[in-house]
Structures are given as C-alpha cells and as structure tokens.
Length: 285
Image 1 (cartoon, helix red, strand yellow):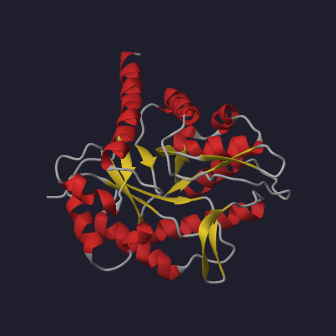
Image 2 (image 1 turned 180 degrees about the horizontal axis):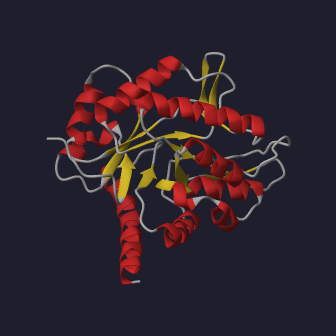
Image 3 (image 1 turned 180 degrees about the vertical axis):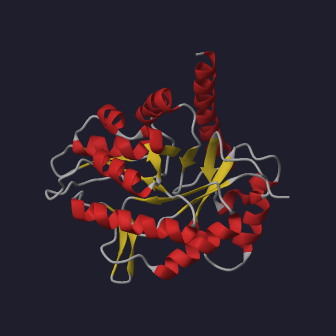
C-alpha cells in the first residue's frame, strides 16, 4: 500500500547506490526527492525500485530540465514527460529552477542565470503558468546560485521572485546554500537577502555543500557543487530561516561524490534535530 503521509522533516535525494540500504529496513529519513529526468523512461529497474520506496515514504519531484527562464517556449515533449512522472508517483511537492538550460533545442549541462528585467519577468511567469496548468498543480520555484550579475538587470532578485510568486501563485523552494553561495560571490549580505525574501511562500528548503575557489582577482568564489557536507554558515542561515518560518520539509542535496548511506542519513538527522528544536520552541511559545 502506498504511504499516505506528507513530506515533513528532513529528506534526502534518492540515489541508486542507496536503494538496497533504504529497502533493508525502515528508512531513516522522512521523505525522498527524485530528479524527474531520471525517471522519464517507461520502465526498468529505476521505476521498480522507486515504486517500492514510494510505498514507504512520500516523494518530491525536482525538475532540472524544464528551462523556466529559456528565451524560447517550453519544450512541450519534456513537459509531457514531466507530467507523466508526476501523475505516476503523485509527489507531495514538485519544483523547478529559476534558470535556463536550453537554446534552440539544445540542452546544456548547467542551470544558467537570468537578467532580472520586466521582459524576463513576463517570460518566467508565462512559462510557470503553462507548466502549472499542464501539471494541474502548483510548482515550487527555486532561487538560483549565481556567479555573475547582469548590467541590464533592473529588479533585485528577491523582488523578482516575490513578483513571480504573486503573479503565478507558485510556491517557493528556498535553497539556503544558494543564498550563501550567491551572496559571497557578489559580496552582499545573506541575512539581508533572507530579510527581503518572501518566506511566507516557501514550502520546501534545500541544504547542500559547496566548494571554495578564487576568482581572477583572488577573491573567494564559491561553487555550488553538492559534493560534501553542509557548511557551518549554511546551517546558521538555515536556523535563521526557521526562526521565521517554523519547520518546513528540508532536503539534504548530495549529488556528486555521493557518500555511504549512513553519512547521508546523518546529515538528514542533523537537519531533523534543528527542525524539531524549532517546532518545540514554537509550541512552547
């Protein structure tokens, strides 16, 4: 029988190397997130394992290829395949990125930043409206990690995201690591960013690791790598968010150099402890 609960507490991204560990006993996490593009085939081992895991825990579907900010129209075939995954597994949450990754039928292996203008705002809102109408449900839009800014931008990122949510009715996925990465790269204050972010629209949180590099001028440059534990500044920002939002479904993203199951589960347990502490504090208050 399919598990009927809702995604709550801490979850992790579902990885093939962990299938057997997850199915060997009661999963030590509250929910799992999948990348939609990994399950767009009709059958095979990935679906066989996912059906079994979906019976144990709620799911979230995270898209990486819809190209919400792409200059052309949405790829209707890709959107149709996304709908098939969503209809098949009935996830609690569906999310995509505020980014673009396609051009003239070509897919790029990256999530690329957008200029924040009124023209881009119209484009993103139109694409979100089309996607939500096709899926028959709300999509959560994720804030990006950025390495450059555009001179033609006329709207602050937080204002842009606020207006997208207002016009389309979408929810938001707040990636706290992306906030830290972007603010370090652009020499801005992450606390001020969060103060301006529409936290009332956030329905899911992402936490992840990043790598430290330097730019051409020798300044710190953070890369959103998802290949290591969550860094202390990101944990601190996460606690700051929870002070205002209370507990929300929170995902540990670890997509590269994926560790053993016990290591990933321990990261989720740390997030769960913070979520529980904030839930208890709000209950007492």
